[in-house]
Image (cartoon, rainbow, N blue to C red; front, top):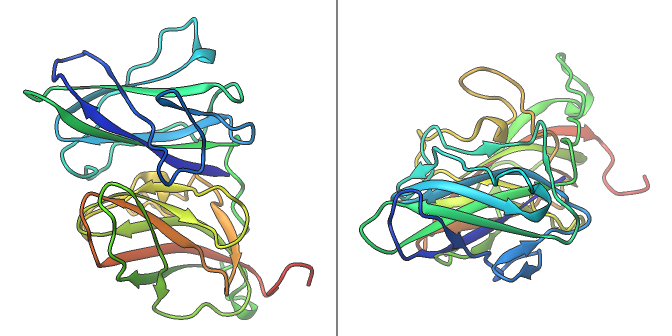
Length: 279
């Protein structure tokens, strides 16, 4: 299981390789803030992935005391501009997640090269370890579609709150047949979207997420979709969440303006015809 949150703040100086702290956003968060960082929960003690977006964003430097005495790592390139690049720059540790100590503070620092102050956003996933395995997929037609992979498209017309998480309820183009499903990838597109996270309507609490796109021709991070459209490789992010057809997840979207048109793609594998727990 993995879960997304965000660091976002204005950095005052635009000087190459001069780092300033990017503050954890507690509004709409699931995790607890600690000073200007985030407290790592005991259930999710590994770094899964992170990606920064800013007009002149240069380097990122994540920090946690348990990573000492090695120097804190610096990461470049990042997404320079007002949206994720295409291809997007996402630092993906999911194949070998980087460990934290439970309850320690996780901080993010960044440098930028503008002539003055500039806002940077860094979206990150933490996880409980290696990816949850994918369900088996059949290469042949199956009874009621069990074991089949497909993509479900939905839309929404929610007015998004700029620079905050807004919860959106997708309306699928076609209703899902009764049964239980595994979400194994996702794509979200709005005119000013930066990131998204999937919000189960029931347990668990965690909300796995990825980088969003602003146009139909933009690429998603390679592990974020079940099938990489360039290579045909199957995702290494595993299963995000499971749900029944009548509990389709909502989606939290982070955008920089009050968009009112959202396109949502769910990569799904039907697990079974079971329609409720215990049956």
